[in-house]
Figure 1 (cartoon, rainbow, N blue to C red):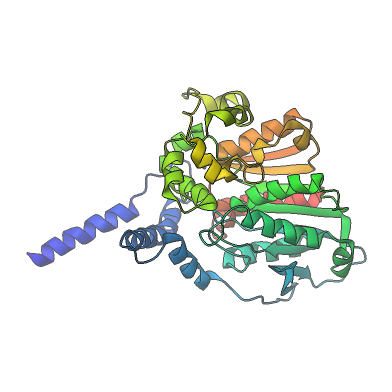
Figure 2: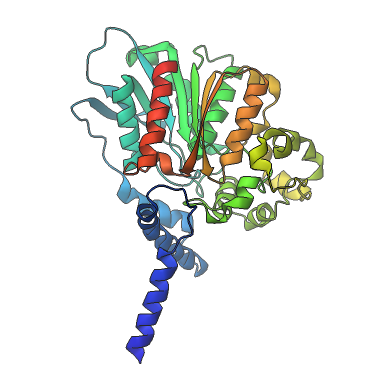
Length: 398
């Protein structure tokens, strides 16, 4: 009898973790399910440990992800070194082949919800290594302090300090980088930071070298309205659920669960800041196809006290979509990737529209079978498609 019960429990658990209701047009669905299953099990175990008070979920995941890091190892094509830029650890990838001219420079910012990952994570190491080789570019992959130990604006300040250091004339000269061909790129939370520092650079009179391009891969760009159509549709999207994205946003600002609860209800923006919704109003900024079946309702006003304690979610350095049109109009050539099955889809789509509205030259690639995290899943066909488009644009534009 006991064996039968144990067998039934095992079957139920296997079915629970193996069965994932994926959208029908996602390529290689079983491969994706197998990719997602171990992290789901681990996240549930870590969440249970957090409930018992054993360890914070984010700390547990960070510990585990250290085992996915690889050393700074050079290969036959690329020399890889580690150093610090203004005290911030960075990893530098330099092509070994000789160049008769100065090279492109790309400053890359890893994703991971401002809480996970590093330049040394194996998927990012492979991406930046390939980028340096294929573009014949010097790639600087930066680290930054992670939540929950550090909160906004620490991540922004780390990244901006490292970027400002890199953009100095003598540093660019040291690494053989053409100051007219420097760009910034990042994915997810890294795309958020890339967009934020790009906006900051154009307003900083002390930075003489300006950026030629920014390349944003499914970036997180606003935390005001967390009931966009992509959030409403996202309960069965792979990798990143709406509730996890809300949690990552809230942990970016604080470990106080009051903010997370308010964000889950979309009741965190106080009335006195309601004018900011004009910058993220999906009813006017999204293409018609993404509005079908959805009706816009202004979010219920939140607590002024909460906004005073944690003002980061109202800060343009955390939410680049809050920038005014004048700031946006001075941005460089822009490349944005969005994915159909991604809760951050509408953030990217709205940024595309706002940049186009003020005359910025934007190249937008939308992947109908794409999902959040696909860009760095190197064993998947969708990753190959996304990376090829990304690198082709950088080759042509940077």
